[in-house]
Length: 149
Image (cartoon, rainbow, N blue to C red; front, side):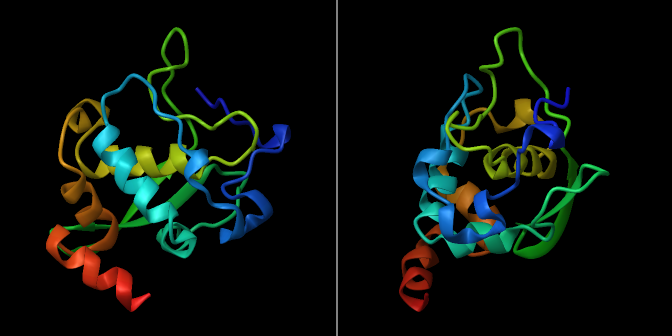
């Protein structure tokens, strides 16, 4: 179901830039993918890291978006649409915080789930593994990468 219609003013990023990417943008649902969302939160500490994952940075009428992740260390373009599965109470998956109309969190979670098979396959895991898919480096290398920014 497309729960973020373009006509409602939703954008991938507020102001179509990295300057408003914040930790508060991430609101966990009931899925059990806190390990993925914790890595997303860590990425949001350096907003350009989140922003640069998106090959498509603005909403489009087709509703198709490219998100660049890593699979076995290889850069991989993951194509997703903006039709988001919902549960009976809309609390199953990550959602926007309600005050901003940006959907980067929803699209990034969907791309991560697609890269790993489906939403069910990302229930439970280690943050270092999700960070590996976002950054293309192992968990032991993350601290040295942070100092390089």
